Length: 213
Ligand code: SAH
Image (cartoon, rainbow, N blue to C red; front, side, top):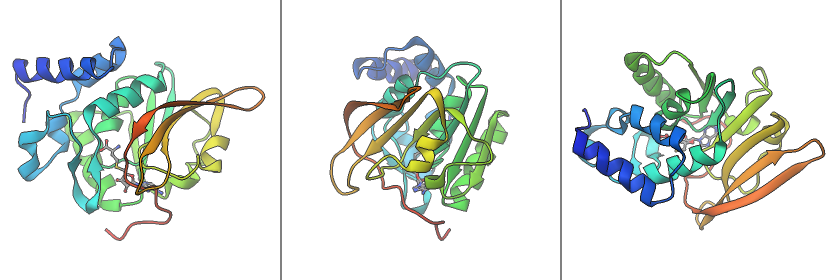
């Protein structure tokens, strides 16, 4: 599926009107066609600002929330980024245009395999995808300049805080899975962590252990 010019203009307009104003974020989102990451019946709604179902009972996030998270992460061109929660691969593809290297992990092997097939087809070569429980981070590749978690934990997982470089930023939703959660931005300082609350969000829960598919 390809986005026509008018659809793309509307898509970018909606992002801006919801607060996604950072030029680099908008330009990265312009390069990634959400229609490539949505399947079947839902492709017709790929450019609407709403979350949509994907395989394994998971969801591809709402574009404006993807944009706000990407913007808050403030990725730099030399950065090594970890994403926990590959899902469809949409967010990772956007990050791949902003970072040097993106590691993305999901507890469902099937989602990782399908996302990797899309990255290959699109010729995206700086994403490494892996099936693993991301609540423990990715110790082999740590530390990271940026960490983005796209599933909600009750608190920021300790291993992820530990795998963030000094000066590094982590953006994640926190809160109970069945309640409204807060999107927070954690910055690792020389002496500790700074926490900033960004807005209310709703994400699927961060679940420990591998999935069944
Ligand atoms: N970023 C995705 C949306 C992710 S939905 C996109 O752009 O489409 C959240 C994802 O987090 C789901 O795919 C779910 O399987 C995954 N997830 C939940 N708990 C996890 C864990 N402990 N480790 C890795 N992935 C996890």
